[in-house]
Structures are given as C-alpha cells and as structure tokens.
Length: 420
Image 1 (spheres, helix red, strand yellow):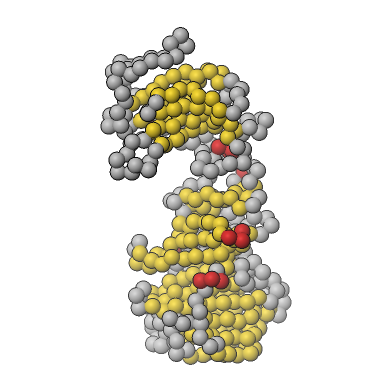
Image 2 (image 1 turned 120 degrees about the vertical axis):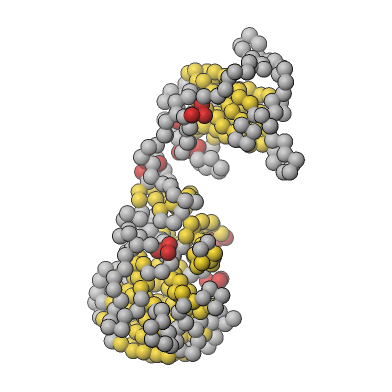
C-alpha cells in the first residue's frame, strides 16, 4: 500500500531551477550541487512504454538515480510490489535511489523508493514525476493525484506486521488486529480474523513472526507486567489447511521440571490438593463423556482467603476457554473474548473462542511461575497442543489447587516442580 500525501505536493518553487534537461539537451551540469542539509526537488515528465529488463530514466552521479525495472512477480522483499501486477502478470516498477553520505553511518550507501506501474490508472503514456528530499525524507510522487490506493483495505494498528506462510498472507495489527487472505488473492480479499473469533491472541502484545529451520514458524510477543515493562513470550505456531493459525509451547524453551507427582489417576466432580511449590507444571488428559459437551475448571488459590485467585475454565459445549477469578461457589463467571470486546492483551481475565482438537480426548498443560520480581504469578496454559493462553496474576502465590468437572473425566493428573 502506498500512502500519498496531499499537502507535500506543493513545494516552494520561488528559487529558479539549477538545471534543466530536455530531449534536445539530455545532459547538463548543476550550477551548485544539491545539499543534504537543505534538500532538493527534481521534477520531470516521463513517457512510459513497454520495456524489458532495466532502463535508466535519470542519473545525477553521487546524488540520485531513477530507473525502470521488471520486478520478480514472486519477490516481495522490502517492497510489496507483486500486490500490483499488470494483466499479463508482470510487475514493472519505477524506482528512485538516493545516494547517502553519512559520517555517522558510513555503511549507509543508498535509499530506494518506488511505485509499481500497475498502481497507476494509465500505466502507459506521459506521467509527471516529482522527487523531493527534505534533508531527512525521500519521497516520490507521480501525477500529483493524492488518493488512498485502497480505501477499504483494513489492516492497521500499532506495530503492524506482515508475513506470508505457504498459501496464505497475514497482517497483524499490533495489540488486537489480525487479517488473512490467500497469497494469490488481491489485497481486497483480506478477511478480519478477529471478527470471526479465529485469532491467535493469547495474552500476546504486538507479536512478530519468523520462520526457523525445519519450516517452523515462531511468534515473539511482549507481555505487559508493569506499564511498558514485562516479559518476552515465544510460541510455536501451527497452520491448519484453511489458513487458520494455532499455537503451542516451543519444546526447546519449555522449562525443565523435577520429578512428577501423581495427584490422581482418575478424577471426576470436584477435588482439592495442596502444593508446596509456587512454580510448577500441571499436566492431565481430559476425556469428555460426550462430544461437544461438558466443562472443566482448575482454580489456583492462595494460602490466605481474600487474596487474588485464578481459574482456567474450558467449556467444551462452546469450544471456548477463559482465565478469570476463581469462585468458591462453582465455575467462574463468563469472560469476554477479543471478538466480544474482551482484552487478551491485558493478560488478565479474558476468553478465547473456537478451540481446536477438543472434540475428542485431549491433553492440558498448565505452567505456573511464581516470581517476586514481577510481584505475582504467570499462568500459561496449552490446550490440546493447539491453543495457548497466558495470564498475569498480580499478588497471587499458589498454594492450593481445586479441580471441578462436569461431564468430563480427568486422567493421569500430575504435578512437577519447575527447576530453577
């Protein structure tokens, strides 16, 4: 997407041009060289025709160069040029490169900006081009028609992040946004994943995605604890055939544990246990009596009454899970998902929708990390190895576990202390 700015098209032209080129005079010298301090403006008209390879349009040695070139239709590196292809599938672009002369950063050699010709209403023919360098900003304008290229293009928000994975493209909108489309579809095909309740937000803030060895994709995000201070959260992502993305713990960085202790081989209804460790890993298998029915909750309680609490509640009838305050009278009250107006990015009480893989027996892993440095506990849950949830519980030091089930049997319930 290209952001065209209206007001900056009108430059101060009180000073006469230092040099003029015409078809009759294709070469000339500057009366005084352009300076990085004051900046400069270059205006010209270009007659665009079909071309092959690369062509130089204008060159000012040591200052700038303008060229036409054919971009690889599959190359989105640095610029998303392939989003605007001509009918024949080619991606011709007009690019302007500014030569940099930086004492502080001698490795900074040039700065290139460009526009795919398919973005123009009439790619062929005459076009007015303006290049402006303000001393810090390098800008390219074509035809002075300053309009939003895609007024209905939705992705945005703080720290917007684009990534492609296989047959799909994604745009992350910082704290609460996620859009998806087939990779071969135009930008107008992006769908709001959050509106569908299919997002992967799990307590993560401004997530970024990277691909690592073995074709694995990882998500790194920030977890707010105190103001802008907090923890780093890393997830391994998984992609479903329809493009939806789930998440799981990354094996290589999952904390090591001591010897596991079995709390129960089989559990139904309600059971309570005391733990001497404030940091531990809890693992169990959940077996619903009937598909798409039942619920289970794990309450994390302090030693003293009245202190902060936490409950992970999984509702199989609605395929949703949530973090909320534990209740002494049964399951916790309902929390909202991001689609419903909840705030997973607050890393407190919230819900996630459309759980994956819970229509059959599944495994739940819950990691509790009590830490004086953060003044409470982090509670991290992995559900069926396909969805994750993180919650920060200020002031909570876990000393008691309460399990509640309704239409669900828990098996092989084990707890193990985290190693330092």
